[in-house]
Amino acid sequence: MRPGAANIVQFENVGLRYGAGAETLSDLSFGLASGSFYFLTGPSGAGKSSLLRLIYLAQRPSRGLIRMFGEDVVTLPRDRMPAFRRRIGTVFQDFRLIPHLTAYENIALPLRVNGVAEADIDVPVREMLDWVGLSGRANARPHTLSGGEQQRVAIARAVIGRPEILVADEPTGNVDPEMAERLLYLFVALNKLGTTIFVATHDLHLVPRVPHAQTIRIDNGRVIAPAVGSYDDRRPAR
Amino acid sequence: MFGRGSGSWLTSTAGRRLLPEGWLSGPMPWVIAIMMFLMVLAAAAGLALGYAARGLDAHLSGQITIQIVDANKARRDQAAAMIAARLATMAGVRSIRRINDREMTELLQPWLGAGLADNDLPVPAMIDVDFDPAVAGAMKAAEGAVRRISPLARIDAHAQWLAPLAGLIGSLRWLAGVLVVLMAAAAAFTVVLAARAALNTHQATIEVMHHLGATDAQIARLFQRRIAIDALFGGLVGLLLASIVIFAVGDRITEVGSDLLGSVDLPAFGWAVLAMLPLGGTMLAMLAARLTILTALRRRL
Image 1 (cartoon, rainbow over the protein chains, first blue to last red):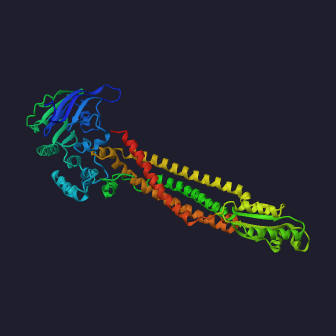
Image 2 (image 1 turned 90 degrees about the horizontal axis):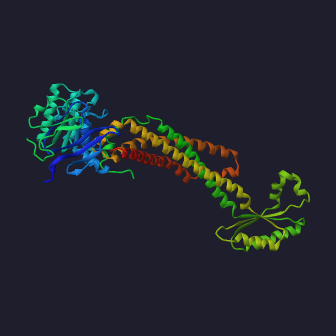
C-alpha cells in the first residue's frame, strides 16, 4: 500500500509562505489516521494555526502535497471546495459565531447550508444542544453566552453535519479548567463515534487526559514529533 | 437566472438575519429612487415623443395641399374642379377637400383683415388631398396629374415642412433613450459600490459561511435579496414621484391648447412600460450585485 493511503489527511513536504516572507511552515510530512485523536502542540508562533488553516482549507500551501479524503486538495478546483469543507468541522479559538443568530440558528447553519429540509433540522439541533448542555439557551444570542457556552455552541455547530474530521484551534484557550475538561469530554465522545479529532493546543496538561491521543509537536514551522503511525504508515495506537 | 437549490433557508428568519442591517439602512435605496425618477421622466419623454411622431406621421405624411394660383377666378375654379375630379378617380386617394371661400377668408383674416370677401384680391384655390399610405406611388401619380391639368399649381407635401420637426423629435427620442441607458448604468454602478461595501461589512459572516461549506452562489443570494428589496423600494418611490410630475406636465400641456403640443401624449402602453421600469431596475440591481459578489468571492479560496 502507498504510504499514507489509509490516512484521512496526508501532508508530504508541505511548505507555507505568506507573501514574500520566510516559510511559516516547512517540510511538513505526516498523516492523520481516520478515526484517531490527535493533539497538535507547540509554542505560540510555532505555526499551529497556519497548519490548521491548511487542513480546514482556508489556505493553500506554497509547496508540497496535501491529500484529504483520498484527493489532492492543493490543486482542488475552487468550486469543489464547499463539498470538502462540509466534511470538515472547524472550531475556532474565537468561536466565530454569527452574532445576529441565536445559539439554535448558529448550530442549524451547517445543515441549512447543506440544503437539509427545514422539517429535518429541529431534531438534530435539539439533540446537539442537549449534547453540549445548552438546551436551555437555544434562543440566546452569542453575546449573552459565557465563553464556555459560546465554545460549546461552536463545537455543536462544527459537528452537527457529522464531519469526518474535526479541527479545533485552541478550543480551551478561553475557558476555565473545568470547562476545558468538559469540552475535551465532548471531543472524546465524538471521537468514539468515529470522527477524527485534531486539536491544536499549547496547554500540555490536556494531552494526558486523552490516553489514546497522538501528539504532533511543531516548532518553528517544522514537525519535531510526528504522530505515531502516520507518514511511515504505522497505525496509531488506540 | 440567479441560481437555485439549497437556498430556501435564505428566506427564513435565520437566513434574513445573517445580514442584519435593516431595510433602507443605507443611501442606496434613495440614490436608486433619484435615478429611477430621472429614468422614468426620460423614458416618458421618449415614449410620448415617439407617440407624437407616429401621430404626426400618420396624419400628415400622406397629405398634400394643392394651391392653384390664378388671378382669373373662373379659370382658377375650373382648374380646381378638374383637379378634384381627376384625383377622385385615382387609386390611393382617400379624400379630397376643396377649401371653400369662407374657410379661406377665416384663414387669411389675421393678415388681410375682415374685408377680404368684399374686395377682388385674388386668393389661390386650395385643395387638401389625403392619400392611403398602403398604396405606393399614389402621391407621385397625383402630382403628375395635377401638373398636367394646371402647370402653375403648387403642391405642398405636408411631410416636407414637417421634416425638421420630425428630425427634432427623433433626436429628442434618441436623447431620452441615451439618458435612460445612462441612468440604468449609474444605478448599476451604485449597486456595485453598495455590494462591495456590504461584502466588507459582512466579511466575518462570509468567512464563516465559507468554512461551513456555503457556495459562492448561496452567499451571493443573501446579498441579492437585500439589494433587490432596496432597489425595488427605490424604484417604486422614483416611479411614484415621476408619475406625479408627468401628470402635472400633462395638465399644463392641455392648458396650452396647442394641437402640436397636444399630440405629445403618453398612451396606456407607455404607462405600462414605465411601470415595468422599477422591476427592470430591480432585476438589473440583482444581476449587478450577483456579478459583483461572485467576482469578489472568486478571488478568495
